[in-house]
Image (cartoon, rainbow, N blue to C red):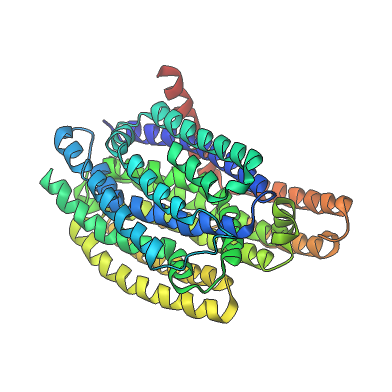
Length: 495
């Protein structure tokens, strides 16, 4: 399979994944806004932080390394050996769910049953649901590797829709059930590879600490009460909404593209130059796209955070630390966007030995991140988690940029040029930030709905001006996006 064909399939997978993420996040957005009117923020905090952390940690420890290792390489392989390796995720999931469930029930602070009833049931069901999900892991890897787009989209869409509808129904009719609602909804729904799996496990374990570090600190050190944890998690989900809509499907799809096109651990000059050139062009365009989207969220998010929280959750979110949290998170989204693309390439091109060396860096970064999170939280509250995440993400981006620079150093390709913007576009971003900032001072958010609508209109005008400037100056990116959309449509028609 040629690199252009793989690129077309990756673009198709990314576009379908993007539509899937829009559906997921739209349903989740409406659901969270709905349940905030019926349940206490303490229950939301327990579910979204404590129990979700139990679920995600079990899933991560059992499958992440297997998934990354088995997605590397081409589709021509001994699938019986790969499936045998993937089925190990199930007993691992049982082990981790039992161990972590015991910790959650006996070592962590148990919430007041009068405020958060049925906590024990929630722990058991969330752990069990993680094991059930692992039963489908071999088939998920097969669908992802073979790029069975429609199968993957339909299966994941149905799962999320059914869970969301059931949760909303139970909240509406039986709000006094507390954690029973979320528990029922959650329950509804070869040797070379083995060595590579172990390398990815070590690297992924450290990445999990960096990704979920604030939840571990909240859970084990009790630096925030359950109510503040609930507010933080709501703001965190809202802040990451647009980023995950765009970047998660792109990162997953193009990781597969880079892993198929490039030979892991092999110098760029020793590989097929057509594939190296295509990979460089794609990486440059993805970096540019991530930078533009991240800057847009950062600039406009700063001026519209308070309005968004007031509409979404009322004064519970907009009157306290919520606006400061969301503004800080907008900066984090910019770093998150760039890191997703750089690590997507880096992890696909690294050799096993390079992954092992990277683990040492991640170990030091994990330790410093946890310490920094605790210290910053003591100093400036929940905002400290976001500041620590920004520091962590900046270091990870630096590591990946250094790898990419070394990888293409002896070739004529310079994909890191995607991180440069034209002066005109930079000026448009600066001007938009200034105008929307002034607009927020005079029009938002205590002046009534007419003033709010005027504030939104100002933002829409500035956003249109910025996009128009990008369309005129970033012609290479526009051509790349148009080409991939055209390829994706042709693939859909012929499939």
